Length: 193
Image 1 (cartoon, helix red, strand yellow):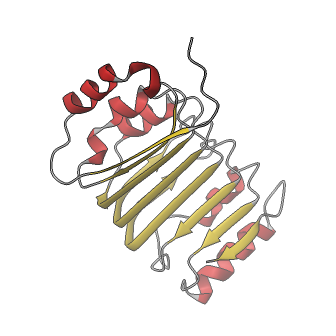
Image 2 (cartoon, rainbow, N blue to C red; image 1 turned 90 degrees about the vertical axis):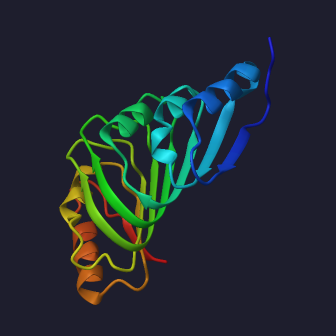
């Protein structure tokens, strides 16, 4: 039996095709060590096809996904929901396509960070999704008029802080401050980063 004292991290950056076969080959070669992977960062244009690979990493606690055009399918989110210890998810993109988090998805997630340089096309978090979420970062200066509603904040029972891009408009800032103030169970801090 091998015992690991620390968390193992892996960062993969690629352009073009990174196939599931390539990753499965890596898993076969390093079966024992891969099981203990605690932190994974994937960067590239085709990362959303890697959900089977990510789902195999049962001890993963931190996942970062970075892609110019990021749109996560329901299959990808379902695969992430099958990673029982995933506590931190960071999504970085120039444009974020569709992100729809359903009730029961990502139940172990404590921190969600979304960093978008340009636009968020569609972001919806259903009531009952992310039940353990304590920290939400929506870092997109073009959040004004975003389809994401501040009412979703009320469904986060454990939320402690919400961070927004410092360049969002005053109307957006006021809406988020009001949502925090009227939170049913706690008053999360609103930060502007």
